[in-house]
Amino acid sequence: MAAIARALTIAGSDSGGGAGIQADLKTFQELGVYGMTALTAVTAQNTLGVQGIYPMSVEAVQQQMDAIGEDIGTDAVKTGMLFNSDIIRGVSEKLVQYRWDKVVVDPVMIAKGGSVLLLEEAVRALRDILLPLSLVVTPNVPEAELIAGISIQGLDGRKEAARIIADLGARHVVMKGGHDESNPDEVIDLLFDGRDFYEFCGPRFVTRHTHGTGCTFAAAVTAELAKGRTVVQAVELAKAFIQAAIAEPLRLGQGHGPTNHWA
Ligand code: PLP
Image (cartoon, rainbow, N blue to C red):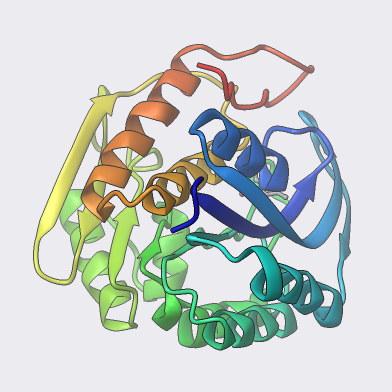
């Protein structure tokens, strides 16, 4: 490991600064990790929604990964918005080439406002090509339903989906509990390592200012892994980080406000 822990995020840009590459870099900085980026798409976006999506070419994404792989190197990698199956294939090829194995896959699919951040044609590539390369995958409940191909009810349903996703090749599945409203007071994030389940409980906050919380959580897991923490430690620390962020919203913009990365 270099003198400072390094992390690379391969994700989309959110012009509004709450999610995507911007959330990842702010999180890396807060957690004392040197952050690098490979941009997969530019979005025109604010707290009201996504106004435009401009994907990068596969060559451009791969060239950015080569630039890191051939020089600075990285201790951990996070993937976020990948948009289409060509980008997923191109990213997967480079993960293998550089033997980057601390890979956190945030299977970003649909923004909270409803915009499609991963085309339907790409779900299969994400499941069959990228997931087997991941150390950790961090689906929310709707994403887990699409990946596992089942509908999920409560904690038992989430456990069943986590087993299916682990069987697809992800070494750890962290299924976030925010969308599981079977428990109105608590959010339970579930970690499955292929053998055991771990539950991380915290209070549920009712707020619309949660734009970018998924990206931020996965970025915090990535930063802690880059520093040499175990997956269980990284998830525990990331949960504390995101809980503090949601508890103290910044209240910026007119809509779905961004994550507070300073909390
Ligand atoms: N925009 C980009 C570029 C993202 O990567 C993400 C991450 O999930 C989002 C938007 C979604 O933000 P949210 O669903 O938290 O509003």
